[in-house]
Image 1: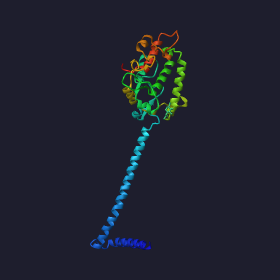
Image 2: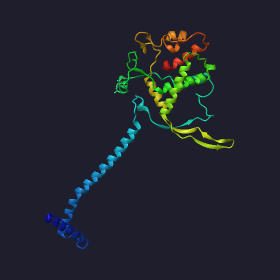
Image 3: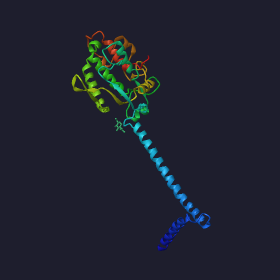
Length: 301
Ligand SMILES: *[C@@H]1O[C@H](CO)[C@@H](O)[C@H](O)[C@H]1NC(C)=O
């Protein structure tokens, strides 16, 4: 042991000595040159290894960082075939009292048309594998093209909002179903839960204005949004028409939405929401029709 240590000491002092001398004695000294070569040879491998390890470590962290941010971007607790089309984006929600858009304002045919267009892709066909991933079953779409019936819930939430809007303007819409109160209750609570679920924490800010003691909120703020257009485009690719009587067929009662009966009577036989008493206002059937169309029509038909 001692021997080895002294060996090492002497060789290392030799090394220092030689490097000390280097400046004085030139490379012409063959012994020195040999030593130098030996030094290079012994150092090459460790330096190479250290460089490789460093490079590998840096690469590892870069890759891991990327995977992490990818994971973060595509991480979902709940599976949906639409997860793949979701890309968070910044968007201004223009919600000042004075802001205008086709969905806002008093009822009119144009406004109703705009609202109706929101729902044309709501009925979609999903695969057995999609359902497996959420541990659910659904009713098959029976038109021979396979798949199962689903609605991305955002369409249902929007339907609830549309229905509440119609209730607020019910002098115009004349929807007088006995199910209105329970439907209103359902929609308010559904929207409450979903708003709290999504919990948009973008900050509203305030300004002083000359004619108001109270600070004025700025409702024109930027939000982190989902890209609605891509979601709706995906739904459009997967939609089907529930008024095509081959698509939704009850095992014993027949087609869910028989078009002829529905068009003739404005109601769907055997569907509780459409069983109602007498004394309905004239426009009712038509409005009921619109309601159903939303779920039913897969648009462009
Ligand atoms: C799937 O759903 C069934 C019935 O709803 C339930 O019994 C089962 O525990 C669920 N399986 C998983 C993995 O969640």
